[in-house]
Image (tube, rainbow, N blue to C red; front, side, top):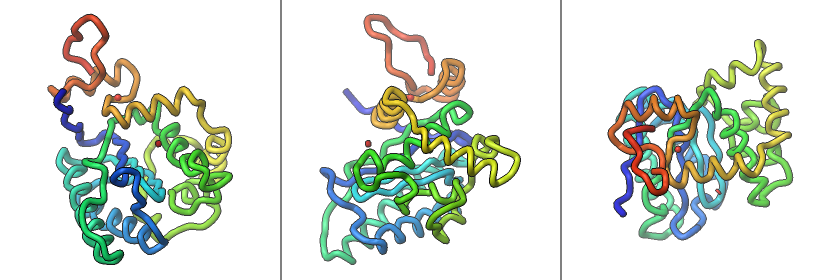
Length: 237
C-alpha cells in the first residue's frame, strides 16, 4: 500500500518524530545535541515555525511545532535533516544515511491533547531508562516549562502554546501545575494513543476536530473503519 503523504497545516500543532536508521545513535555527546538545537533555532525562525516543545534522545528526537504556512514545517525539517547529517558525518568520520527514512508527523488537537503530548515527550527518557525522573534529563524543554533545573540558552527558541499559558495566571502557577502533570504522568492507554498517532500519521483529536481537519485536505486523516467505506473525514517510542 502506498504511504500517505504527511499533513502540514498552517496554524495547527504537529508532533514530529525522527529516528536514527535501524535504531542507531544520532546524538553521541553534548556537542551533537547542541548542534541540533542550534539548527532548530535557526531554521524555525527562517521558516516561521513555532517550536512549542522538544525532546532529544540518543537515537531519536521529538518536536512539537506549529507552522505559520503550509510549506514551513517540511522545509524546516528538510533543512535541519540535511544540515545535521552533513555535520554529524564530517565530525564523526562517517558517511551514508543517518535517519530512518522520512520524519513522521501527526496533527494533534492542541486544546485537548497538547499537555498530554508534552508529558509524553518529557517522560520518554524515563521510559527509556535513561533517568529516574524527568527533571534529571537535560535535553528536553522540561526545565523551561517547570522553571527549574538546568536550562539552555536554546530555550529562547521556544514559543509556549496557549494550552500551556492556560495552566495559570502567573509563571509560578503554570510551572507548578505543569510539574505536577509530569509527576503524575499519563496512563499506558494514552501513551499508546500518542505512539500510534505519530507512527501511523493519523490525526489525533476529538471527532469534531478530526472532521475540521478533514475539510482542509483531500488526504484521508483517520484509519478506515473495518468492513465499510468511510466518507471524506477526518491521528517511543
